[in-house]
Length: 356
Ligand code: HEC
Ligand code: HEC
Image (tube, rainbow, N blue to C red; front, side, top):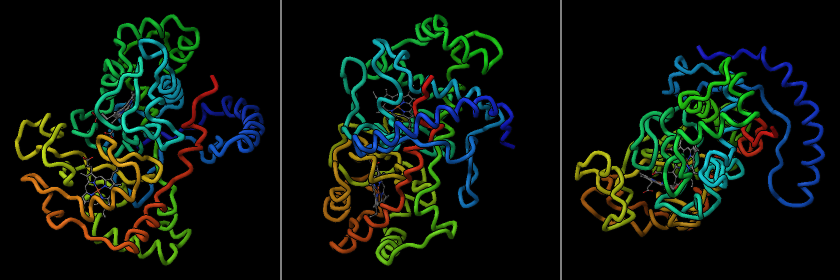
């Protein structure tokens, strides 16, 4: 069903070989200079990949068939600050591959003119399985999703019409649009479909947990104990293998809701203070936590479930008694959560910033 045609790739692959050699040198030097993960040669063939223990994706690939050239355009757009009003902010400014496509470890990621909104930038992995977007689920299609950050005054603060003008004037984009769609014409549809092509490819499926699921590795005793505890206490909401069931719930953060969450969309009082259950894939890399980034450490999150759950009428019934956890249980759960780190998405060549 999903096109895995790699024919278009041969010329790009030749270029890549030269680039990769350069990258190996760069990688070696950046390892010496800092601990940041170096981008390495493509470790896998380009293409959408859904392991057999994942459910079927909800994204309809039939209406936007996987295509390397459209993906390449989307990748360029995702990393390009040209899309913001003052040329300083790109999608990647708040969804960085070095941070598992979440924000740069700040509670609220700054947009243009260093303005900030009210919510924490979520990690945008495995969106092909997500039936809704935003903490309150206010957007239900990935192909309209980018309009929100592009036009939001505290994010990229730009109009689609102006973005189209800027892209039309760019030789680089004339070429990319022609290669992807046959003509140089820049339309909002083409921009949005291409961004969706890129985002669909941000798939996290090679953590230690995944390798364990595939029988390639086994967990240590502590990881296994953490996994059992997780299955008893967390997985009703953070459901395997995507580590969310995509429902909206109140996990007891507040007694009064400065951000009303799901209620803003449904206007139903029983949705007050409910937010989308976030995935826990790569969770140790995506701090700070919760819709407003209030907790900086995973220990604070576990302590919240242990002793901090606030009782309101919309509190999820599963949390009526909180989730009592001893110190050693916390250690075990953290050991398990660490197995959800997927270093591949940090270093995946195809997901990294293109070198033009
Ligand atoms: C200034 C920071 C910022 C920029 C720039 C930004 N985002 Fe986001 N992004 C956020 C925040 C914050 C949220 C959560 C917003 C909410 O829930 O109201 C979000 C949510 C999302 C989501 C929903 C994820 C989910 O699982 O619900 C997607 C998809 C997304 N952004 C894609 C993009 C794309 C594509 C761009 C570029 C066109 C972009 N973002 C630019 C901060 C940013
Ligand atoms: C009743 C459902 C439910 C249960 C049970 C639950 N969670 Fe959550 N969890 C949520 C919701 C909802 C959020 C988002 C709340 C918000 O931001 O307002 C969340 C957020 C989180 C976050 C923050 C993730 C991020 O990216 O911001 C972590 C970490 C987390 N939970 C871990 C756990 C662990 C570990 C357990 C078991 C000890 C657990 N949760 C049990 C519903 C639940």
